[in-house]
Amino acid sequence: MSYEFPERFERVHGGIRRVADITLINTFPTTILSHHILQQMAKRNRGVVVNVASSAANFDWFYLAVYSATKKYVTCLSSILRKEYADTNIYIQTVCPMMVATKMAKIRRSSFFTPSPEKFAIEAVRSIGLTDETTGCLAHQIQAEIMFGYIPDYFLSKFVRDNSLDTRKRALKKIENSAKTE
Image 1 (cartoon, rainbow, N blue to C red):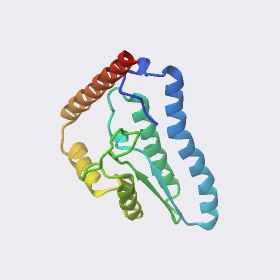
Image 2 (cartoon, rainbow, N blue to C red):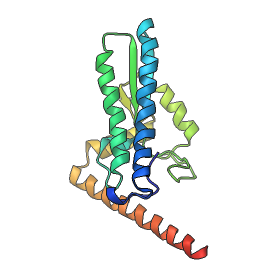
Image 3 (cartoon, rainbow, N blue to C red):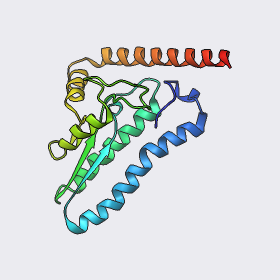
């Protein structure tokens, strides 16, 4: 779950309820399900846990504070669990995808860098066991390596800020236009 559109923390559309929902939906199930399944896996001394976060976990996303923080929580939890279970045959992987053509992302058409959910899932499943943390697909891994490995933080911050503000502006314009037609 995410914001309806990027917004400053105190002005999040939907207020405290939306902030609470984002926090609960993005962290609680991962925590509870990991706890439950690891009890069973520990008894068998084997298993695979795949927690899905987002590339938003890799950077402080301007005007998406709660969403970004909840995704960092998932990567942090997975990293700690990986260390706790390092002496077992339990494999814990984190998938941090970039954009996938879904309703939540508000992207209708897939492309090389924005795969369909089906294409993404096929590649993500193939990555299980190859690395502790992945973007889930080759196209996203290429993007992440460039964005987070080669672009200086200053430029990435500016890009993220400008992108968030542009997305916010377009969303507010759309809301304004739909209010006029009602």
